[in-house]
Image 1 (cartoon, rainbow, N blue to C red):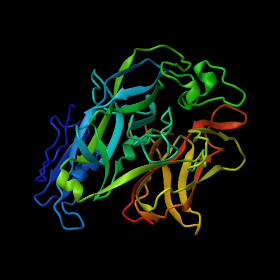
Image 2 (image 1 turned 180 degrees about the horizontal axis):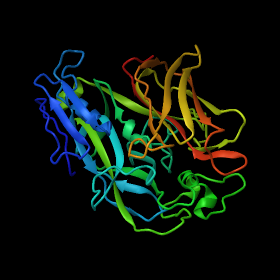
Image 3 (image 1 turned 90 degrees about the horizontal axis):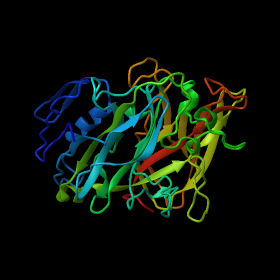
Length: 409
């Protein structure tokens, strides 16, 4: 790791040395209140907030403050228009830990911009998903361990990373044990410099990557593999990038005993997946052009266990409006996450890009066998691809959820 935000069991907090260039001031008073001024990358605030989380569980037992540290992945190199899509090994704390927060974004590696965030208009962060080979989420697309690890990730979003950090409320944590189980990230980044059609490039339109596709598949992940290259207007220098990720965790075993573990579930709107179904979630889909302003897609999911959903984070691509989860039995809308679009040029506020997605902060209970519906809405008549019948290709509609089984029936 290069820089660190760290708090000891006594609740102390030390600012990273040297400080990140966009983190101007962090003040921590003696009783653990935090005041944060002028932070342009919100996920840093999540790490700081975790460092002064409540120190007592509901039982009254002492719980040590979370540790928080910033790491960097190994470097990747891209030319204008080039695609990176591969697994990269990540550094994680050793031993049994309880993860309470995770955030990531893409930064420059080397040169005068070393460590600075990369604008999406420069290099598009299509998605990143963090996982272990033998430690995967509980569903819905992976009740059984598929050979291709379909949607088995523990954390992950995409272009919205800088404003969509994953943060579990106290006293919940995701249990992880690094022993003989390497952590890695499936990183998909596309260098948009000098591309002929940046939107078609970042949506992986097959023809824009020099591939034919098929009548039924004109764009998406299958046309956007590692080292593929979008059509460009002129060449340019190769640049290096790295994934910066901030992890907050508890490692004190006595503290973990007084906290509550959660399982991770992922809903994918492309698949009505249950315990007996043989089909997998499709991962992506296309949005047709229409006279109406919105294209709706729906799926239903059966919870295999009862519990409480304590955090939920949707994932959408450009053109996305919102994702909503509804309790089928009552029609209650338990979670809505809306896309936030940028309106400028700086990193974190890029015009026309999804730069954040509102999270569902209110928890809700689920019963074993209960059915919930996921609805994902995309714009079908706004800025779109230069195609007659298709507005967007290869879009995604997920909801990541952390579920505690403290309330189970």
